[in-house]
Image (cartoon, rainbow, N blue to C red; front, side, top):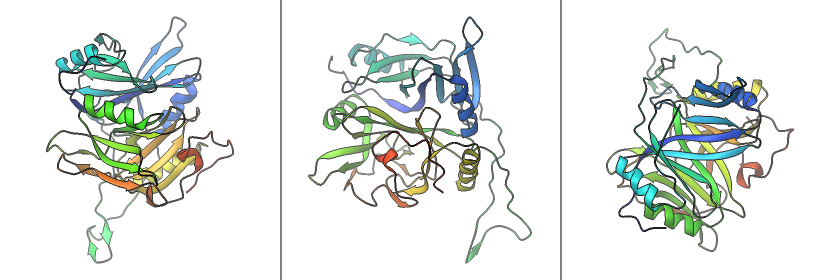
Length: 337
């Protein structure tokens, strides 16, 4: 790998790719999860081979589901600051592609794909995508009443409609890496990632890190990327912001009633503070709804802690082995709430 002239400047996380043998079953899950189908591409026989999904925010798309013989994770993409960042990526990153056009993708743009130097999974960098207007989705915005502070006017009631929890944006994704130290050095030296939290084991060896983007005084999510060390590589999950807690729980009930399997939740994380709700899709990939996450600037220092009981969540059910070790789930699983 050629040493970089400077760090590649990432602006925000953009989208992820997943591969499915049964694309229609995946499509139905994503609709029930709260995505909006934006564009479908078909093959010569008229069968869907690629489906782009968006949230109700301004990103042209946040997830692409692809037809494949075997399920798989196709990587995540970050928006870079300039065309120059794409050029640096193409010339200096491991097994990087040339700059290419995002043909047929909503919003267009150009991209570069490279391979993670530890485990070989793909990461994508994009620039020049056109943002889109927010979708007009009815969302609750009613003041909350507390015991000694009543904010909602008298005779003003709370009423909700059962439905999926609408996805606003992609918030973060994470993987299990086989070499934490090598991955940490690479991503922090090549990109403007800044560790918000690093978790070590009892021997003081760092095993997990949650990274935000260093955007100076701009407020950014606590993390947009994380990895944790383990014996083999595997994608852990991708996470999507929804509107508020009521919306999240309505989405939880919707997924449960549709027969999907809850992985873990609902609960409240410690690092990042999000209220979380993790679900398995039909191919056992984990997808998270979250609300109420922390925002940080570059002024916030990196926090270090030891892994242990209570380090992952402050309330909610205990994390199952399917979440901690990514062990295949039991088909008999059900909602944990």
